[in-house]
Length: 139
Image (cartoon, rainbow, N blue to C red):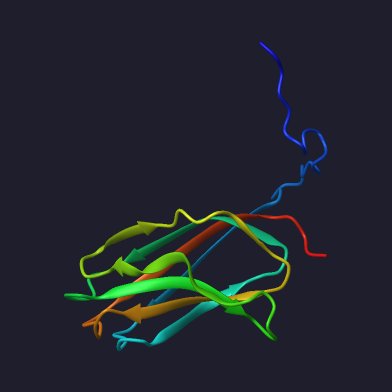
């Protein structure tokens, strides 16, 4: 049996301060959006590698869907991706939690976290997005 090593084995910085390099934030909004409305929930800072995103939501009504992605905070970098974490077909009709299966992404510039209402006008809505990652720094 051989030994295999990751390409970055023993080359990563070790963060030993009280807070380490963990980063986590939650963003929330309560409203009854119409189909196509966008919620700008908050800003993910530059230098964060996001690897976990969850949407916790209340019951928004029959046929209600939502997609979750990002837009550049200013300028055009990175390119906007309005359904990076959750596709437009994500149902929010009944209360629940949706977990993204998207690949980890590192933001070298700040981005706006955007939830877009779809499917139908939402009868009501409570939306909380939990974002987890680590601080890796921006160039």
